[in-house]
Every structure is written in C-alpha cells, then in structure tokens.
Length: 368
Image 1 (cartoon, rainbow, N blue to C red):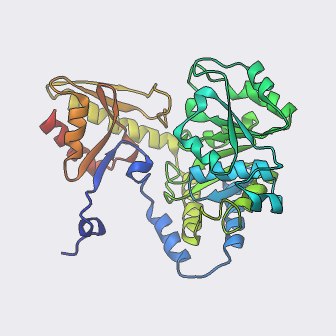
Image 2: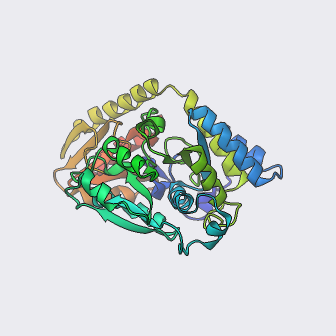
Image 3: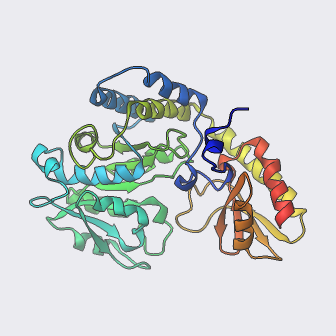
C-alpha cells in the first residue's frame, strides 16, 4: 500500500480537538477549494492582475468596500501598517523599513499587546502603548495622538481585558485626527457577522486569517475595508516591491481563498452551530460516564481564545494532572490534540470530523 506523505516523513497525523490553530495547520480545505487551486496551477497569469481581480471578487462577496489578499493575517498586519505610513507613495514604500520622514507610530492599548503585533514592527513602525494592562481611558488615547501617529491598532481578542476600551468609544477620537483604525480579527469567525462588525463600527481596515473558519489555504489572509487604504495595502503587497515582497502569495493560494470565501458566504451557520453543539453534547455525555474526571460544557472566558461562540467540553482529570493527560494524548498515533487551560483539557468541535469522535472518546477512556 502506498504510504501517505506524512508516513513517508514519519510525521504523526492528529485528531484536532483544539481548533483552527496555526500550530496544527489551521483548518481543512473543502474539495472545491483544492480543485480551484489545482486549476490555478495549470496556467500562468499576471499575478498583480489576478490579485486585484480576486480582491474585488471577495469584497463583493463579503459586502465590503475593498479587499487585499495576503499570505496570512500576520502579513496583513505588517502590510496594513506599511499602507498607513506610506499611503501608496512609491518612494516611501521602497524606503521601508526606514521610516524617516513618515508618521511612524502605531498607538496600541497596553492590554492589546500580543505576540502577533511583532508583525507591526516588520514594517519599521514603532509601537506607542496607552494605559496599563488593567486600565485605559479615551482621554489617554487622545493625548497619545501626535503628528507621528500613523494608525491605531486594535486586537479584537483583547476586547474582554480589563484595560480595554470599546472600539465605538475610540473611533470618534481617531476620526477627528484622521488616524486610521486597524483591527486584527484573525480568528473572530464565527459569527459570520463579524466580517463587517468592526467596519460598521467605523474601523478603516480589519484583518482576517484565510486559513481558520474561512477554511481557505493556511497561508492566506484578508485585509478588508477602506478602498483608498486597501489600494495602499496592494501597493505594499507582493508582487510589488516593498516589505510585502518577502510575503509572497501565489496564484494557487489566491484562487483557493476566493473559492473558500464563496463557500463561506453560502454556508448556513445556524445549522453549523447546531452540528457543533450536538458534537459537544455527545462528547460530554460519553466522557461524563468515565471515572476520574469532572466534565462540563461551556464557552471560553479567557481573553485570546477564539472563536468564543463555539460550545466546548472541559475535562478536569482527578487522578492525574491536566498537563500529564495532555502529554499522554499527544503521544498517541494519531495524536489527540486538545486545548489546555489550567487544570482542564478543552475540546473544541470546530475541526472535528464525525468519525474522529469515537477515537477521541476511546483515548480519554483509556488515559483518564
């Protein structure tokens, strides 16, 4: 029997009960997405023309003004920062990451600093923090604005933090000074309405990962929003010469994310939520019958865990620690990958297949 590519490389596959996490490959692509990528691979095209046409198609599908396709959400952050500093000026975009003569500060709430905002720094921009991890106010935001301010960066995953401020309170201040507001919403789907939520609040650009619930290629991302700023994103994006040249996006990925967005728009998420909840409850009922575990259902409350709208199973082992059980499940073949939150393992149904549920339950039965 022919070995799979993973068998040839001696790499374990997994049952993904964690979610659309980059560390485990994001999400699986639909056959239609793979076929679109295969079809794209059979022809040469001018990449800039394809990139522009695909962006227009996605913008129309999602009901937004404009779209720039990137090679992931982190690339989207870097390219959006470059766009806000250069506004498409040819000399300035070729100058980056040297920001001399440009506004080159990104305002960020202290509690919105994440590992992902290192992508901002790739553009050459400097981060100016506002407030503390437990407190910030709109007066501090306004006081931080200067002629060096290029943008305000808002990490949607940090919205629940004590030191956060609702975007609707921040935007009027930034509009007054004509400072663009850029939102990192990489994993904030579902609900589907989040695609336009931040733009409707007044944000100028919002960034999504293409490889999470959009179910496109893992190396894809979208910058959505203001047409003028998206044009500046395009100018800084591959195949053009700027910092985005090192963040190459190929014709296959572009074709794949277009098809993925088409499928996403057509998908019935009310039905999908029912399916996820049914899976969660079946898993919960089975695991509740196993000794040595406290099992509950719930939604994430810890900031940074997305998407927060999917019901999960929380399992607390009682005769061993959660990290011990977690490590044992990772030692299996296929691996069982769950979330780990303090004393509990967290099972997210978002990426589970129906035929993987018995495998998951059997592993817990054996190792709890």
